[in-house]
Length: 207
Image (cartoon, rainbow, N blue to C red):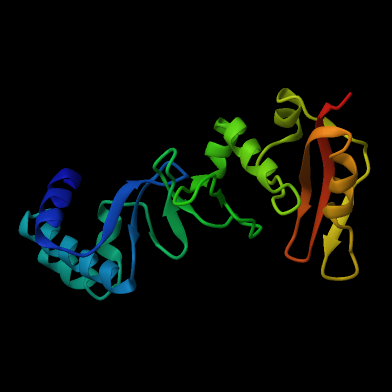
């Protein structure tokens, strides 16, 4: 059924959509606008009815819903202002995590990668962090992964930056440490909408 619907859908509509797995492993659709979603949903309903995958009664009932027909071929759908296609794994991926952390990074202009790809290709993500260590906080790699790549925690001290008097800044720490170590990464240990706690990891002590 799905293959038939997708084939006829491709031939019957010129609006933008993507159909592929999302970061949760389920089949999903990505649209640029509500109008595109509604057009695709309507066309899927027509295809399902024309091929006798649903009855006229089912069609009439679900026609009242804005997106009911989409769920015959997909488990979820997203809009392009809330999700993207990762250039690494090619999955549809929400832009933000449940705690509102950004769920992507851009190693080069025009490229966007998800948090899973950051873990899979940790060297690429680490290089991205080291390009601007005071501006780019590590939120994807665990402490164990950092240690596997030669980093060690400078100490058990945790710093905090936030909206209510938490004023720790990575800048003076970095400018002091860069004379002693080749690489410095600021690693998030706790992220909330109001404050971020972080530790310092270093690599390559200079002689």
